[in-house]
Amino acid sequence: CCSSDSCSCDYVFLGKEPMTWSQAQTYCRERYSDLAIVNNPKDMNIIVDNMDKNNLYSFWIGLHENELTWRWSAPEELYYNDTKAEFWNWATGEPNNQMDIPHCVGIEDTGRWRDLDCSLLYCFICFDGQDGAPQAKVFVQTPMRWTDARQYCREEHTDLVGVRTSAENEELQSMVPSGTLVWIGLYGDAWKWSDGQDNLFRYWEKGQPKNSGNGLSCAYVGGGAWTTQPCDTKSSFLCY
Image (cartoon, rainbow, N blue to C red):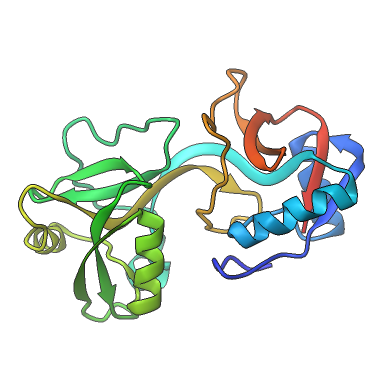
């Protein structure tokens, strides 16, 4: 199974012996690859279509809650030794770290960064370039959600733009129209896939995710959409 938005996985439904999330993770890693990742809507449709065939309607997948980490969209060799962000230019009160939204970053015409819901529609900046060479930056005037903007940049250019220094931030600031916000390639996510893949596809039920109040939660497919459950709950699970 790969992490590309266009890839699909071969899934194995396991329901005879309910396990906690960590037990299921160990089981999948010992016998298959890992707990299931879901790359895209096509993957989710495959899972839903196979629920009836397997008589299995609720189960663990490989997504689990972790510490909120801010990362750049661009692969590490294009910008950093690690994709974790090192330069910051947050606006006052940011990042807001709101629990019930996906976190993506927009840059204001002041050069300050805002922690925003990834589903909002904004223009964005792509870049062209590889291996640390000078990056050509491209302003795209069509408003999109952050994930759609990233896909566009990856198809038409290299990726959403990253920022390494204050000088680069000033360059981006000069490209932002007055009074607007523009997506850049920084995102924050407290939800991680068990196998470490960097995949932002989510299929949360309305009102999810939410913390159980009893520690960290894990993602649980129930009736098609994703909800959260305490990770020590015993359930069926899905491997790949």
